[in-house]
Image (tube, rainbow, N blue to C red; front, side, top):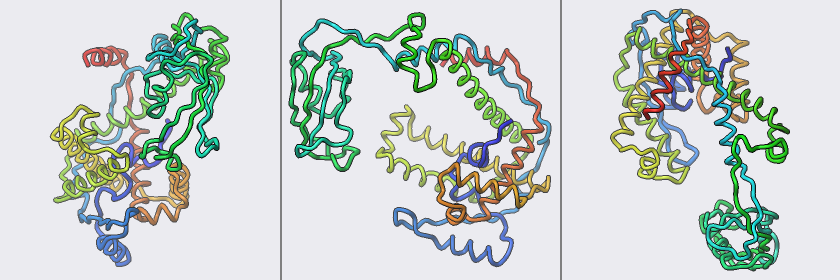
Length: 395
């Protein structure tokens, strides 16, 4: 079974690596001094002061372990069906429509106009502003304001000069708020047609999916099935981890250290708000996009953080019980994988951001989870598939 690095993040904490899930008893004077400096605060990337809460605890006082090795887990079969392959290919067909020529000569709202265009700023073509043979749906608002509207009423074969201005908040700062001219040639008006599964041909597949490695229908079907199998394997691994932690919480008694939940909730919300600000969203926008209320969001966050903390405390208790430690060779490889897969400049940058103790704890937790996953007894039951299908239909 494949193992994912930093399982502590994905399967245990479900939080960012920064901050950890609490702080154990200090091991020596040097670590106490380091932690004191962290408590005093440090400069964040945005210039604000970032503080780190310290909650002292002994894991043996927080967790009473029950059975954790050899747990029984029942899952579905994760078999890829022909219908699933067909459904996935149908989605791909929607993303790659064909366009049929028409005898229409005047562009109207809702038409698909095949155009060539060149964008000029101060008389010079700018990067990304030129293309040929683009099928543009008039009224889709795919282009900046005034572009599509400027083509309505124009004739096939006509050349149109559009004097436009990019929005002030345009993602390309060099073009934001700038006046430009688009020289557009209307080649033809076409109809958009989405092929059905039975109508696709080898020629169509080769024309639209060569970049994905598919040159005919047979290769497409085989490749899609392999991708779905890979996805289901990943889903299976995640489901096993999820069910493992459900069983662990059922079998083990956990009492969170006083103040830890509140501290981590505050930290989570702070990080969440930073992410919202970075994405340009406000909380009301996020709630609307998820169709939830503030009360529902707060409850979900509290449950997520609480479960994450309980999972980590259980893992820490198991690590101690099994005497799992950070071996030098494995720990070095772990840090190297984190640096490579998570885009850190160096191992030193990783340690500087999170601290050696926390990264080492993450590695130990990863080893502990691997031990547990190797011991689980998984049964695959087709009846579970039927139950899941029924639940999906009810939703």
